[in-house]
Image (tube, rainbow, N blue to C red; front, side):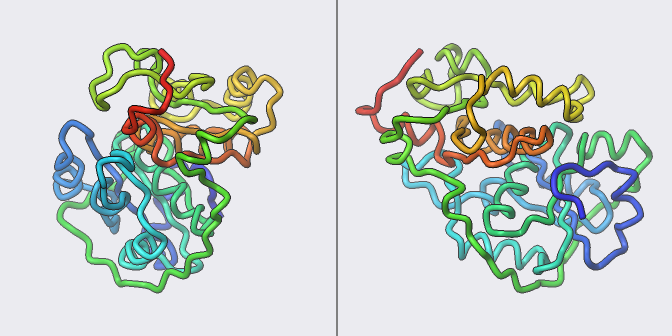
Length: 276
């Protein structure tokens, strides 16, 4: 059972196993069609594609963020269509870093499906290590996905605004955290009191996750004694915050929660305070 990361060598022998489902999550915020085009050109054999905007996000209202969390029914329908059943081992991957695959990883766990892992190093590492590649599309055999939501795993914007204790951690780059060169959201800055931990710090130079001990040391510096269960992750739109949650699981620091609407939802209301 794989619940955090999986290596290419461990995935390769399982591609023909019907109890395993591989999901390609490649995406580019600047070009939303790119990931699916790359998938059609070549993907891990048997992999299905999940589009960040279409499959892993809900409807936008203009005030609920750039990648709002879908409803439980919507997520369940998507996962069932991908062929994910109650005992399916899911493996998610993206181009390399896991920043989009981690979104699927968290969403499945949020609905009670813990048997899901991110391919460490993504498609780039798979190809570099000689993994097979298949072009075209894969039609999945639908399954029945039975959700068991863990509602306490995420906070609404009002809950974040009302919180007086705990620690907020912002996964965006230091520049965006400070309000410099903000290009994705109309307002620059961060939620008052938040600390910054750029999700890229979880990765080695080859875009694989750092060893658990190294991640633990880095996160201990951020937490400064704070219990992980009192920590809430956010980012720009609720995507890379999941990467930090995954890193903390790898580090042996489970229990943190997420603010899915993140900065894009927080900053949509001009009455909410902003720090730069």
